[in-house]
Length: 170
Image (tube, rainbow, N blue to C red; front, side):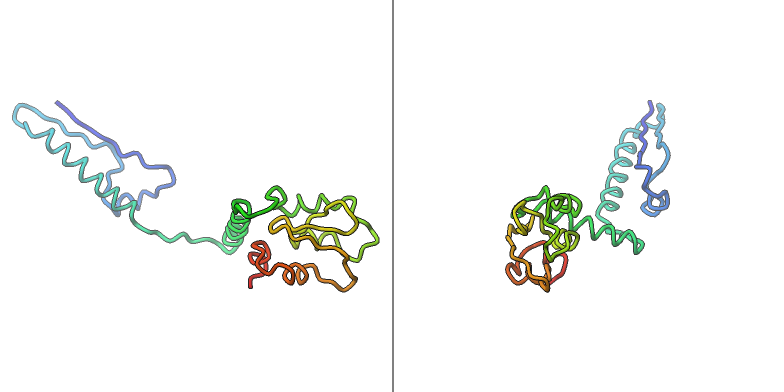
């Protein structure tokens, strides 16, 4: 009689990690004969031992080390996900800059505000005069003056907007 098992780890699991936890990387085979009647018991004990080692490995907290570029990308994706998945976002389909910027195609050219800056501030064009709306909090701003700063106006009228807080902080 013979028993065997194989621990098949994902390709991204380093062999050194398996070695560190003494988890076999190759097949483990137990062979028995009339002399060796306790093969099944050794086989089961071995599987239980390996399972405990794998459990121990899974509970290990190994730090993720990222490059500066990877860290920046991670932060941007995390912020975008938080905005998209937040149930209080008024218009989640305008979460991206490009989706907001596209709404400014018919924005009046005689207005004092820049379409790019307005889009950056989380604002989308409503289609009327110089009226814009925040995709996140739904704040409506209009009657822009030449020296108005969209970020300041957005913060002034809704300092608790999640998008403003994520992009600019408190």
